Amino acid sequence: VRALDPDAARAILAGPTLEAARRLIGASLIREGSARRVVRIVEVEAYVGMADQASHARFGRTARNEVMFGPPGMAYVYLVYGMYHCLNVVTEPAGAPAAVLIRAAESEAGIDAMRAARAAHRPGRAARDADRAPRGPVDGRIASGPGVLCAAMSIDRSDSGHDLVDLGGPLRLEIPAVPLADNRVGASARVGIGYAPEPWQSVPWRFFDLASPSVSGRRAGSRS
DNA sequence: GCAAAGATTTGCT
DNA sequence: GCAAATCTTTGCC
Image (tube, rainbow, N blue to C red; front, side, top):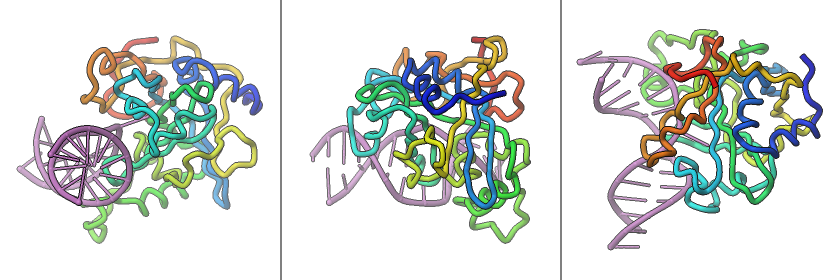
């Protein structure tokens, strides 16, 4: 399947975030380098505007979320729980704070480099017990969660603010010209936002590939 | 200044 | 099913 050229991809990301989020299911995330790594995105979540009480943008413009207020197509990477990074793709025009969190993906190329990157990033107890038999991640779940996806792709805050759409960048996003059919995309409430009041806690702004075994956590949800 | 909580993951009970 | 690991960001004094 052909990928959209950068201008067309940017136009999708500049549009409504819920539509952009669905277009990112099936998109490729590419880490260029001596060992090229490619994953196919299978799960995302939309965070839309300052009114969204689950979004980092709910505090208004701050040093951390600054890039969410900028132009579409940029990476917004932050640290959660002091040990994992999360990658977002900024959406909507500059001034409108919105982004799509990339929650899970399947490996398509460079899985050796991904395994090595995962092994090098073992926080907490896992690192302390590193001498014990490391029960390495199963290949099919190498990027099955926002934190481990960033670990497998060596994504951290140094990637934040960089353009994911521009050809030639070290970390790139390619959106297929033909979107995944609606009946192959599931939707559910977003994960890990128990702090948010309703309706934000329950809006079905998490989207995932119904056929993928690499979707994180529980797959509860309906067709979208 | 300081306390609290977080868009997570893992291993043990 | 639960708690630990770990540190940045936010909010309040």
